[in-house]
Structure formats: C-alpha cells, structure tokens
Length: 303
Image 1 (tube, rainbow, N blue to C red):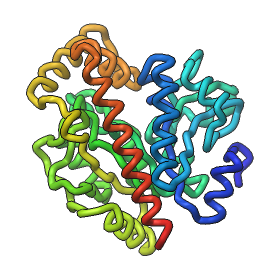
Image 2 (image 1 turned 30 degrees about the vertical axis):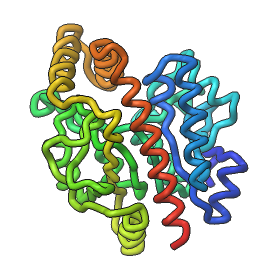
Image 3 (image 1 turned 180 degrees about the vertical axis):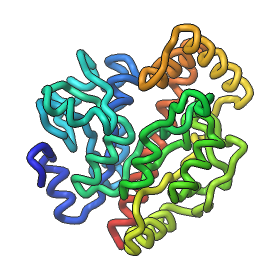
Image 4 (image 1 turned 60 degrees about the horizontal axis):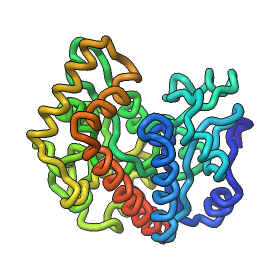
C-alpha cells in the first residue's frame, strides 16, 4: 500500500473479501454539473450500484491523499467544487505535493482503481481523439491509460464531440478491445449509434466478465472499453447533435479554448444549445452505465 493511497474501510473490506467494487470518477461532479444537482446525482449513482450488489468507490484527491471511496463530507467538497482542479495523470504528483483538491478524470480514476485493486469503472463517456487533432495533437490521456492500465471502463462510448473514427483507430493500434454490450454499433454518448462498429458484441454481462477474466489471466496489458448505449428513450437525434456540436466547436475556436478546458467548455455549450436536454440524457446514460458496471463486477466476482 503506498503512503498516498487512502481507501475507505467499506471499500477495503469489500476488496479483501473479493466482493464486487465499481470505481467512479469525480470530474463529472466538480466540472460537469451544477450544485446541488451533482450531489443528488452522486448519491443516486452509488444507490444504483449498491442495489445491484456491488460497492461504489468514488475517487478524488483531497488533503494530499488519493481517495478511493468518499465520505458524505468529501462528496460535498467535490460537489461544491470550490478551488477543485481537474486532474489527469500528468497532474497527480503536483496535486498531491501541493495539497490541492483534485477531481479525477477517466485516466486518473483508472490509476487509482488499479492501485486499490478495482477492476471495473463506470463513467459517462471516454475521452479520445479530438476533431482536428491531426493539427492540434489534442488526444485525451484516457486512451493511453486504457492501453496500459488493467481496468474495464463501462461507458456510453466516446463523447460525441470527438472524432470517433480516429479514437477507435487509436484504440485498435494500442490493442484495447472495444466490447459492445448487446450492440454491434459503437455508441456516441447521446446517440446509440456513431456509424462505427465494435470489436465484439457481448450478449450479456457474464460474457463481458469472462472476456475480461481471460484477458487478465493471460497477463495482457491494459483495460477495455465496454460500450453500453444510452437507453433508447433518452437518445438524442444524431444529426441534430452534430449541428449543436459544430456550433460549440466554433465557439471554442473563437474563444481560443484548448487543452483540458476544451471538454467542459463544449459540454456546457452543448447543454446551453439544447436547452438542458443534453444534461438530462447525460444523467440517464451515467445511471445506466453504473448499473451495468455493477452487474459485470458481480459476475466477475463469482469467477
């Protein structure tokens, strides 16, 4: 156990007993939603995971410690988001050394999950290759983390504001399996289809768990993307979303937004341009991913 890692007693006990645990990020709380809606969301996600028989483990950096599992007080800190940094892999050491409070991205959550011994992580959508990356080189650290860190990420595909084709090409190059959960189509966050396929359509959660067990039993490096489409009733129209995304991208370009500020800026503008409908869809897909992640973790624990 490293000196920086702090795991709650509940999560520690579950891991020692080989009970299912699902990791959760905190960037979605601190940088993705307003207060107090984000606090309500965090409690509901944890309830969904518990209802399926798994233990939730929200991650964050607080008080110079890598936190795996948060108390009610710590969740409140992350949701109020006062002077909370968005922390990816490159920022972790700085955040710890300076005592800054940090919200964990997909990449950082995977890091903390691996340190704690957690194999499954539920999020909204992974980061990836941004549109125009052939000139900007704007590629999310999430992809390298997936290539190297043995954690399966259950998500609604990649955020639709990305270049999904290039994101999938990158994952293929890095040897990261993209598994669809009951789908042949790779989802695009708000939309069930992106026009691209997955590597394998798993018919159920047990099959996903078997695939992950085989991968890790073989000692194959890295994790997997478990693509879980947004429920049909909450799906947004693909063409309408493309128009909204292009409008948001134009606004980002005009304001000189780049780097890790890009995604929060675009999501905020997409919410504005859709009159808040995109946020409602975002919540529902996150709940759906948490539920499926818990089911997969439970199936895996039985193996």
